[in-house]
Image (cartoon, rainbow, N blue to C red):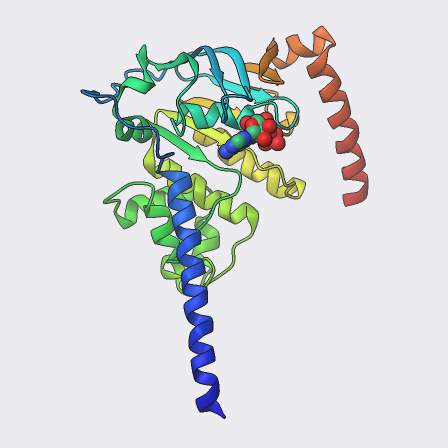
Length: 301
Ligand code: ATP
């Protein structure tokens, strides 16, 4: 009977391998690759980042020509400052991040980094300058050490450990039976959402980019984990130009600038205090989320 089952077992293994291969490919695509139509302009030069000043100049974009998603968005993010983008689901927040990483080209307007149009520089140099902590990190089916080291080619063990420390995941790794050699992902140890996000933060710390995009997870972590992750993210943002795609306003109170995006347009902009005082869209969103938070705290207790 075992003879009969072995091929089936094998088939299952092949299936799982292929599926994992696809997941890995997806991860690669998410992190490093690009939509097929975006190519280097002829004679493109490498991006020269002196400070990391990011500008969106009257940017318009649609995934399909007949459906415009962004309608003339202008943003100015001085070097080393933070910009939080908030707004209803589907407003185009993540699209801004995808355009900055040049997954797509703008339909009109342009995006510059230190005065250079990102559509005219070598993509590899653009992507080397930007770190992304995505909403949901897909891990490679490999060791946790490899998953962190992936942030920078040729990173040594000491650097990997330093990054893990910065992301506050060093203690967790030290407690694993095989430490940095422990396999994670589909065929290994399953990590929680918060742990996966910390791996992504460690990866980004290792990459050490001048520009950082944080795509906040929509799925709620429990409030203690969220606070811990928040502190780690704040640390990672220090000294970098940071764009935060935010879903929870409580995490962006300290941002230098907040932009409320609504149906592809900037509806409001200012600091947390200024926007609250204005008593409009942001203030309404804040009140609503504050009420929800209170309810959560009551139920968590
Ligand atoms: P959320 O808060 O829900 O993450 P968001 O503000 O980040 O939303 P985007 O992800 O930027 O919104 O999407 C803006 C619009 O673009 C949505 O209507 C979405 O359906 C559309 N869209 C997003 N990605 C694609 C795509 N690859 N092809 C076509 N349309 C897309």
